[in-house]
View 1: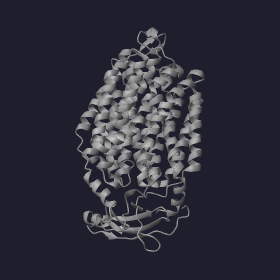
View 2 (view 1 turned 135 degrees about the vertical axis):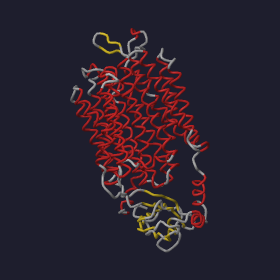
View 3 (view 1 turned 180 degrees about the horizontal axis):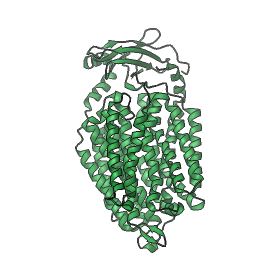
View 4 (view 1 turned 30 degrees about the vertical axis):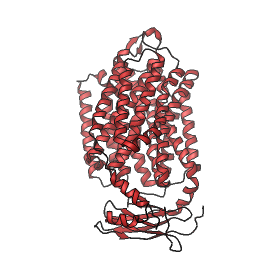
Length: 580
C-alpha cells in the first residue's frame, strides 16, 4: 500500500519542494486575476452582452470549484504529483485555446479548462502533508496560502501592463508559459507521494456537482434578461435545487464519495463552511468593482480616469496585504484562537466595504480600500483551515478541508455571477456600449457588506475550539513519560517504541498512521524513550510509517479491532539512511 523507498528522494527534494509548489499557487492566482484589468472591455472585445461576458470570469471560478475536490480525490487514488502536472497541463491547453479566439463560447471553453489550475492548491498541500516533517508543515502551508495573495497582487499590474501595450490575447500566452514552467519545475523537483487511497473515482458525484452548480449560476447571470419570474429562470433554479439535493443524498450513500458530506454534520464545521461562502463572496466583489471604477473616464462624472497599469497597481495591495497578514494571524491565533481571528477578519472586511461606500471619489481611496480589505480577508482566510482542523478528527482533516475549499470557491463563483449581473443591469448604454454606473458599484459593495454581516453572525455562533486535548497530546509527546501518558489517555489505538538497528530508542521520530484508503489518520513524534501512541478513528487495517533523521524509513501493517484495547507495535528503523 505504501512504498517507503520513496521517502529517500523526498528528504533531498524538500528544500526546493515548498517554493516549487508555492509557484504552482502563484500560477493559480494568475488564472483568477488574469482578465481583471480588461473586465470593462470584455463585452466589446467579444462582441456580446455584459451578462454573457461575465461567464468568461464565472466559468473559471466554477470549474475551479468543481476541479478542487475532483483533482484532490484523483490525487489520492493515482498520485498527487501526477494529478498536479495534469491539472497544470489542462490549464495550459485552456490558455492556448483562449489565446487563439475572440469568440464567446470558445473563450468560455478555454477559460473553463484554465479553472482546473485550482486543483493545484489541494494537491500541493497534500504533497506537503505527505512529505514534510510536521514541524515544517505549518509554515509551508502558510507560504502556499500566501502565494495566492502574492500571485494575485503581482498579476494585476503585470496583466494590465501587457493588456495596455499589446493585444489582450498575449495575456493567455503568458499564462500558458507560466503553466509550462510550473510543470517543468514539478517534474524536476517534486517526487511522487507514496500515499495511495483505495477505492474508485466517484464519476456520478463529479457530474452531479458540476451540473448542480451550472444550473444555479446560469439563471443568476441571465435572470434579468430572461425575466426573474420566467419559466426558464424558475425552472433552472428548481432543477439546481433538485440536482444538488440528489447529489447530496448520493454522496452520503457512496462508499468513496467525491465530497465527504458526513463531516458537515458537526455544528462547528457547518457554521465554518457557511461563513466560508460569505468570505468567498466578499473576496471577489472588490476585484470586480475597483478596477472598473478606476479605469472609467472622468467624463462619466464618477470614473477616476486611470490607466490599466495604475488601476492594477492600486488594487495589487489587496493580494500583497493578504500575504503580510499571515504572520500577524499566527500570533493572534496562538493567543486568542482562530474563532477570534475570523471574527476580527470579518469586522475589518465589513469596515473596508462600509467605508468603501463613501470612498469612491479619488484614486488614493481605492488603495486604502484594497489594503483594509486585504488585511481582513487575509485574517479570515487563514482562520478557516484552523477552525476545520480543530473540529474534526485527524482522519477527516483532508476531506473536511477539501469541502471547506469547495465552499469558498462556490462563494467566489456566486459572487462573480451576482455582481456581474448587478453591474450589467445597472449599466448605461451609450453608443452601443454598456457603461457601469456608480449605483451598480455601490449596490455591489452593499451586497458584499451584507454577506460579511451574515458571515460575522455565523462566526459569533461558532463554539470555542476544544484545544486542551491537543495541548495535552503535544505536551505529552515532548516528555519522557509520553508513552505511558498516551496509553492511559488513549486506549483505542496503537502504541509502542521506535527503535534503531541496535534496539536503542529513537527520539523525535515521526510516526504516521495511514488508513486503508491511503489517507493520513494521525501523526505523532516519539518521546525521548522512543515511545509513541496513536488513536485509531475506527477498526480496520492500517499502516504505521516511521522515519527519523539519520535512519532509513520503516512501515508496518497492523489491524485494530476497534475495541478499547491498545495494540502494541514496535517500529524498528534501519541503519544510516542513504541520504544522510
